[in-house]
Image 1 (tube, rainbow, N blue to C red):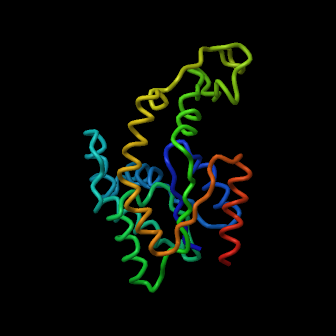
Image 2 (cartoon, helix red, strand yellow):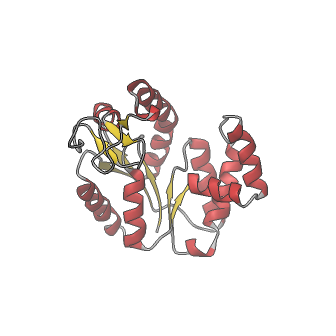
Length: 216
């Protein structure tokens, strides 16, 4: 089974991807992990990607696509894979399809974790993290016992820059701009599966399993 999981920042893609990978015994392939591995191993593509990342620039499509294609052609992907963080654009989506088509293969499903912007803002702007031990909190859903202090070590808890409201809104705008054409592309192909991401973590996972099990 070859799957892509998509969703806006804060949708919980990583959490669901790990559960899907475990249940269906397919590798969870994150573009972040691919970049880190190739950079640490100083591969040619990794070095090229690093030069852009060090300058704060986006890694060009051709490098990203080559890294992903190299990963999904490895032996552990012969029975399927779960892509997380790729594709991000229609250009990348078409490139992935063209690669699979060469091997008379195709994507089985594109799972979209769908959440209203208001829900995402509430989820992300409420997140807090301990400055010392890294413990995570949410001021509404999982607050510390003492406001502003970590339950584990007593240190201060803070809001990360990525979780500040203006930053979250900006990330959501970029996501919408990049993703909407790609969603239309996959919808036309009949493989886009919308999942209500406002449910509990367990309920979201069960909804995904219901979709995937119906395809087997």
